[in-house]
Image (cartoon, rainbow, N blue to C red):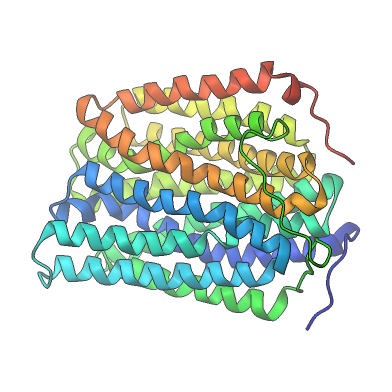
Length: 412
């Protein structure tokens, strides 16, 4: 077994981040390929927008429940086994999701209600198992790096989602353009997390427990004063992609009167623009300018707000793409800024527990965001973006006014 890594200097401290980047990129394909095709698939199956939103709401609930538990377990047993478990669970769950989709579209399962229930079950499996990898990866980076290198390493690891967001929709659009089933890209994406698991298994060094023998894993709550303002800020920010990514397909199709294939293509381009901006922010801007976690939050959240304002008034495809690019820039700063700030706010033996709470925040937003966004969209197509603007303003208020965030200074 490879030796346990310690906190390293310079380029050596970035090697685990690049390995995790590769693994998380493989995983992100399993997520991002679904976004542009899901609205069309829901309608092909005879499911409402609200039912589609509830699929993510229910699975996100499972993520919220499991993620902190997995994080605490990684404090006891080390990070690598839980990263591998999460990637394996993602591949198997996405494969089951694609199988149910195919059965529904082919008429093998006639009842749309049964199809919906099976899709919910498949996504719950994904969430319950894949949630093991999220806190373990963040805690792993905290274990092996410190100071500004930690923020940069988290930026590298997080940028995998941006690259996956670029290539995932492109994969979906290419497969659909060749006349294959809308389910085909999801089947392909079920394989990629398993490739990521093999990458971690072969290349990532194991870490030992940060606890002494017999010591119990620490239990942190969201109300811990060290974490609460950061968690509120992140929740407000992550509500934006939770609503936008799921309502965008409906908005594009209805506002511009497009068919299913045209909707998939334009939505895919917009999501790709967001992913490209996110990737550029985390792999270039953060690495070059080496901004502190607090500065990343203060820059990223206003950019996300600007993207919402543009989506509200977008009258053409270019404006939609630009708005999504701005969203990618904003969230590309907020994600590593928040995750890095959390690692500096707690002690070394609390990293897994804190990462579990931090990693559950996007799921909290997806519990509320998709169902709320699609329900509001049914009332007024603009209302989801207006509501999210108010939510984001609340997060900006906490960031600017809360005494802990104003005084926050990470260790160098």
